[in-house]
Image (cartoon, rainbow, N blue to C red; front, side):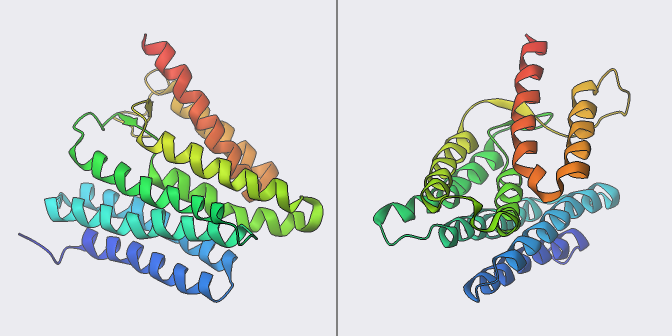
Length: 225
C-alpha cells in the first residue's frame, strides 16, 4: 500500500492548516484562522485533482482526506463559531454541533456509494467556507449588529447546518464529466452567480453563495423529476 504519495502529502498540508488555524484562534486571531481554512480548501481540491492526474487513488488517501477534513472543516469551524458567541451560558456549546455532525457526514460519505455526481447532505467544505468568512464579515460590520442577534443567529446556523450535513437530500456536485453547457447548465449558472456575488460583495458573498447552492440543488432535483 502506497503511503508516501503526492496527494497524501497535499492532504497532510490540509490537516496542518487545520492545526495552525486552531493555534491562531487560541491566540485571538480569528481572521488568520479563516485564511487557513481557505488555504485548506485549496489543498483539499488539489489532492483530488493530483490524484486524478497521476492516477494515484488509494483507500488510505480516502481515509486520510476525511481525517484531515474533520480537523480543518469540522473542528476548526466549530471553534470559530464558539469564539464568536460572547456568552458564558450553556447554549454556547451548541456551536460544537457542526464538528460532531461533520464527523457523521464524513463517515457517511466514505461508505455511501451514491456520492458521485450528486452529494447527499451539505459537504463539510461548504460549511467550513461559510464559517471562515464570518470573522471578516463581522469585523467589517463592527458594532452595527446586536450581540443578541449575532449569538442567536450563530446558534441557529449551527443547528440548521448540522442537520443539513447529514440529511439525505440530493445536492449538486460540482464535478464535470464534460464541459458542455447543455449537460452542466445549472452548474455554470451557479458558478456565474457566485462569481458575480464575490465581485460585488467580496467575502460577504460566501454565506449567500451557500444559499444559492442549496437553491440551485433544489432546482436540479425538480429538473431530474
